[in-house]
Length: 449
Ligand code: PMP
Image (tube, rainbow, N blue to C red; front, top):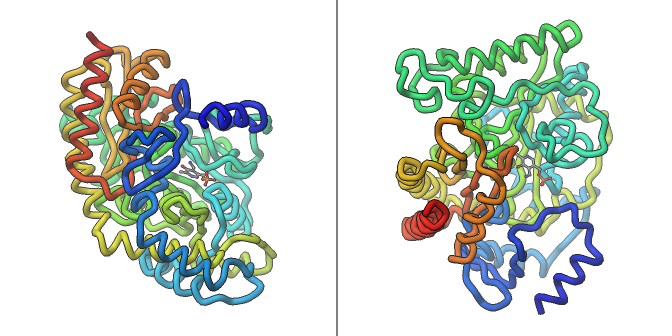
């Protein structure tokens, strides 16, 4: 029963990992976009286990692939060859730009980012790395150094050689709310400028140049990390053109560009399979995890043969990386995304959701910003639209809790924890989107009445 589980959690499990809600849910079952608690109550899961359940909880095709593989072979480590890994690697690489042809499989996004750091340093012979403020790249020691949110940095000295460029948030950053030069009524996020033409983009780029001028040894750099849309930071989109120009600056100083696609990969943003495509940048390294395994531990680093060759002298090992069952699951996930046209669905249902949410933003003073792409959406809650002050936690949590009581699970993010994050399994329907809007509207009405 619930009480026993809660007692064990309270007494015997480290409580530094957060649970959601005053009384966390005890989940017994998942089926596609639905979760069921211990009383059999059904919830629409609009957060997908933190952007991880990409094709649906216990998707039958993925379950079947895992079961079949388990019957024949579970584990070997990479000291032997096994066919599933190579079948999967080939299929995965076919989704990426042609020059990214070498993969290394691990078990989590943090590990993937650690290895990407290592590859960048081995390849360039430089040590310094840039990531953006408000970024989340993981919790291992290496990845925690890249992460730049005080909430997620503990008991580590500020890392040598990691520099943070300013928070590129066009709603809340230093140049937040900057308007497009050509169209003063449009914020830069919505305008159609070509890369480098936007006011905010130029300001943030100027600040990046300052990092080169003042912090890097003679401008030398190993690489820059960027999420294509910041996830945990609260679904923050970069100003137009910034990442493309950032990559050019880094390349001209001898460094490489690393795209952290842990949240934005596998069709999540709808229009593109990979998030970096929306910025018109071709990365030198891509890191991926989460949706890749639909909840099964599976992650990877993919790079060019040239960068990989430099690392071949640096012995590395991951006991579970490239596991046969994980490979079978990863392969099935790719097949399901294709067969069920989930990227297209992410685009269609996501666009519809964004339109409906914009209606809520126009109706309620406390809904400050609605943003995102495909099924990677953020709804930023504020005290009022003018001040943009984050809605205090108590109020935010009231709305969040009410949604849960009405059967709707949402994520939470942003430095002040005031952003609802909507990143469901990509199998959701328009009816699920309507349900989400109806519940959120009801909760907001109750809050504001
Ligand atoms: N990068 C990003 C963008 C993430 O969102 C996360 C996890 N939330 C990670 C890396 C780290 O992944 P993991 O938790 O699998 O180590």
